[in-house]
Length: 376
Ligand SMILES: Cc1ncc(COP(=O)(O)O)c(C=O)c1O
Image (cartoon, rainbow, N blue to C red):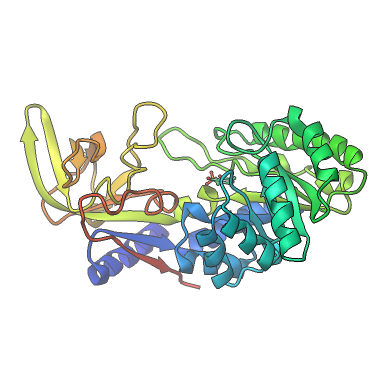
């Protein structure tokens, strides 16, 4: 409880300085999340998926604790390198890499360029030849637009034989966003390792890299439990592949729980049976919390009144922002203490895909400030 109150005090002081709306990221929570993952999977190198939250201070902090980077664009690669992440610890994936992006990935000598189609393999080979070098690749196994289907492997391998400027270093699996079930994730990892063993035999030499992908979720809604990472205690991929580097990718697990989005209450009003809270932020700044990417009906994020943290919920509200669309609804029928103008709405679990996945220019409003706090 004391820790919570300390944190709330720090957030209140920060909001006082920054104004609203704003995002506050707690560096101590990011470090804790990184340590949890690293302790659970000590044989794996953790690559931070920058799209979750590419704020330079966040990337720099993660680099300082030891993370590499999983990047999907020139912009993410630049941010990772600027934060001091070594190219040797970067994997560059994405089904639509441009020629410029491929040249940049070859030129900076990232650890792995994840090839996602046969055409991309051919282009990469041609670019590496023009640049007088060899490109180190992993093959991304996936479905749909991500990677290539398992069945297309023979075609890839036969095409690869003709590519003298590409070195096939291993596989990259598209595991991500499974429900909160670590057993399920472990089973996928084990299945993929067995698959990799078979392909390694066909490739005829030990893989340098196996990227197991991600899938490390966090509890977002009432009733959801945190991933039980103890299930990985006997996970020993190095026993099967003694000469291989293992990558895992994590975005939301590292930064999601570390971020809050804070907006100020401008007005309250009643329409028919619904009491509305109108705030100075909304969907343009936190589309994720508004449920824009929800596969089913949107659910309310965990929302508190920052300046009334210990008050009991006693009223039912809907929370909406200032935009000209009803998508701009942050919560529906949520229980909160009584709210008045000036109160501070605080949306938890907003450290991943909050700022980075929002249509920030919609409505031509000012962008929310972002700040990383860290005690240590
Ligand atoms: C290939 C890949 N790996 C990892 C991630 C990160 O996912 P999460 O934030 O769920 O860890 C993403 C997210 O877009 C991704 O595309």
